Image (cartoon, rainbow, N blue to C red):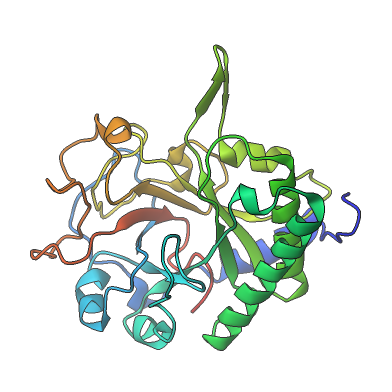
Length: 296
């Protein structure tokens, strides 16, 4: 146990996740009307969602709702942005029947090089995320996913930052989640690592647990830019026991998606069915719940 941090046991989050699982059965408004396309790894308990940095606008929501059960919702400016266009849009999304995937931008490793700043910034980010969630009307026990953009093995002090984030969110009445890479990275001739596995290896079972949202757009296991009525299970992404799998990103990364089936537009982006004007490029996710953050 790291000095200066208090942790909640795995049994506590297990009980919370059991409660969450009881609330994940979608209401009639949350049923997706996606095209009748089947995935070879279809799961009866999987749901499609989208995420993007910029709010698509209220006029886009009815069209997007025809395909997606849930939407991302940033509680901070997304990576590379100075503004957050999602704030104030919860009611508009909720009225259309969307579930929520709450996101908060994580720090770069260069910002948490030593122990004290790692603890301070992890705690501060959790407080800011919880405050934003409350202001936006999200209920206690909602899961907030910290966006980690760096891949491969993380520095030791970054894990200190993550534990501080997890512990403070629990203290404030929210559940911690982490968004990270599930793509294997070679560290040697016979050694590979994923960020997800690295994070789990630094969180002993006696310490605080968290939900995972991974990205892996490599084909396979990714099906590419497709929108199946029966989406693949998040576990197909290569990491077991994850809540959400981001299997397509916009713009596509060519060396990772070279073997993907047709689906990406010629501009490299992924667009929802019905978006004939290609107005809203987006990332595509599969989740075990129609409301992954329990934000409705």
